[in-house]
Image: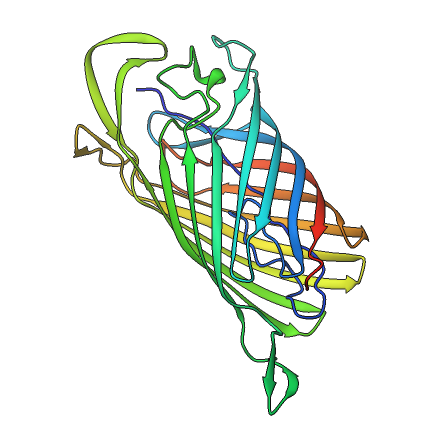
Amino acid sequence: MKKIIFIIFLASLFTAGQLRSQICCGGGVYDIAVLSLNKKALFSAGYKWDNFNGVWDSGSEWIKTKQTNWQMTPSFSAAYRFNKHLQAGVSVPFVINRNELAGLPSSGSGIGDVVFSGRYEIFHEYSLYTVNKKTKMDEKTPYLAVTFGMTLPTGKSDDKADSEIDITGKGFYTAMLGVSFIKTILKNKFQFGADLSWLHSFSKTYNEYYNQPLTNSFKRQLGERLNYALTMNYLINMKSSVSLAFAGFVQGNHSIDEKSVQGSDENSFGLTASYTYYPLTYIRLTPLVKMNFPYSGIGTNAPGSFLVGINLVYYIESLDD
């Protein structure tokens, strides 16, 4: 069976903090769009270019190549804050594939998998509280949130695609549950964050493969997946900041007809560096660079690659804060 090469990367979103909210918005690299406490909503337009710099051969050996294929993904996101604790967002990507592989079409494109996510914020950094009718600021409690989400298989996967170049999505409904933690080390200067999430993909029945009918249908399910991310954010001044994120995943064997396929487990990690410029309190521009490093064998979701991207965010600020 041919192996799918597809990567979804959701850029880390950071924003300058103000009184009664954290320096950065509280999100890791797997969040769609995250709002700080003084923001009511946002709209985001992004673009990334991902150059895959190698392939796995049939013996699970990594072969580095000068260039085999690349992927361009414009995306649009939005988020809305319902109250102090609850917010939700949605991201819609459009995937454009190109390659230089013999025997395959040179291009393919289509809508990717639409992702919905939300978070329930238990604690906020620098929250105000009242003691004996005096207002004080809590400088000890970190930011802590429970995160959740759902990925819809709106992209074209390996059952409907004519070839690998046409693949724009994984083809599985996927549920996510996790936790997000942030602690400011130096107020208005340096912040550390950690995100951990568990993803469960629901099984899917294949009646065709690469747009060809199958004599015998089969049921496939992706393995349980654990995402992790560690981020560091440094606020240069009130109009610019830099960040570094280390993130990856570990995923178990997938199964076919409820039987585990040995050797199909996957894991990978990457480093992302970004710079954020805030010309106005309601606008943020973030260019970023990411390196993905291959770790496991054939079947890996995230092969080695070099990614560059840019994100433009427009905020609607809360008038009640």
